[in-house]
Image (cartoon, rainbow, N blue to C red; front, side, top):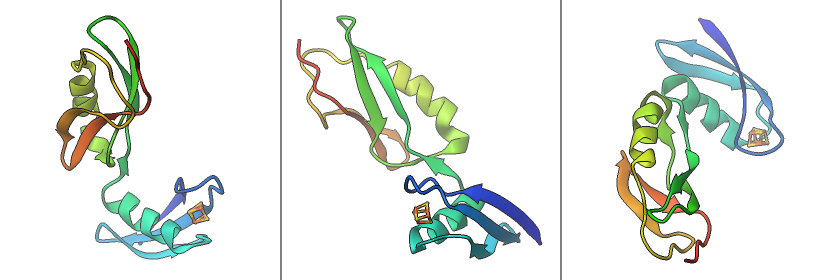
Amino acid sequence: MEIKHLTCIECPMGCALEAGVEDGRAVYVKGNSCPRGKMYAENEVVCPMRVITSSVRAADGRMISVKTSAPVKKSEMLEVMKKINAVHPEGRVRLGDVLAAGIADGADLVATDDSPL
Ligand code: SF4
């Protein structure tokens, strides 16, 4: 069995986790203070995923902060970042606007701030 040491990133507590991994899945998780930590470790050893936060340049040069609406596989982040860099919204952008639907499997690119003209 492989032992993996992880830091839970689900909340600011940052619990130190230990996961026993066999056949590509977690067979136990220790160190979590709540069920979210166990779920985080179980997912992390199989398919690590992260929400991407970034910014895009609008057609008129404004910088607009954005994020993916759902976590993206870490193995696909580079490809998704290339797609994000190609997004150049026009006109007013409001918090929560979808700037690119389906930018990753199950995730849209959404604005995280208002950006008036
Ligand atoms: S295990 Fe629970 S309390 Fe600990 S960092 Fe993760 S979410 Fe926070």
